[in-house]
Length: 283
Image (tube, rainbow, N blue to C red; front, side, top):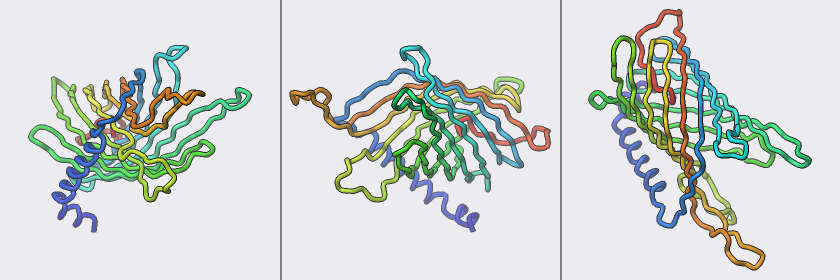
């Protein structure tokens, strides 16, 4: 049944994705009265292992441990993460799969007692793959459910839409370069908001990422990248004891530059390498 659907409506879904992208960009870029706050640089090294199945299908496992810079003690470990997933390709254009993200972090409560929490985020996603001349143009739509480990935090459903454009450039032997640009918009799903709840922004996060991947062999590749990640929120006005406004309220756009390096090792089913289309390290 899904094969019939995918065969008959790629143009309809493609148009839907373009319209949705326009809506996301419109919501993210309309910042007439927003204040922009730039945070310090983050560094994000990622280690990945990918198990290539038949065709283009694969399993993957990866770490995600960002560091913030400029703290009192220099580099500060923010949180340790682990991502795993599976993707199946139904044909050359359509694929889908599931991921599971685990993110641990610690907080210090009363008496300087540190507590460890783990957030869990299962996700289902659908991917469409186009070619524009010698370029690959992909669209990825995912829906996930965040289950926070911290006390008092509510579980929330959220969706993310990513567009990416890249090109493979052989430079001799097995070495292949992959320059790539991606844009992702992320929003919480708000089914119903109480009247006394503060109004939230339409788009919660965006990420613009540029990178160059280096595939050195069938088994090893690495990708240095740089991204601007933005969080959009409404903040409350803050005053001093005399009622004077210290921090004005309103719309805030918190921008965080991130410098990353992805290292990936690929294992093939049957131990012999075979021809396949491999996705970028940003699955």
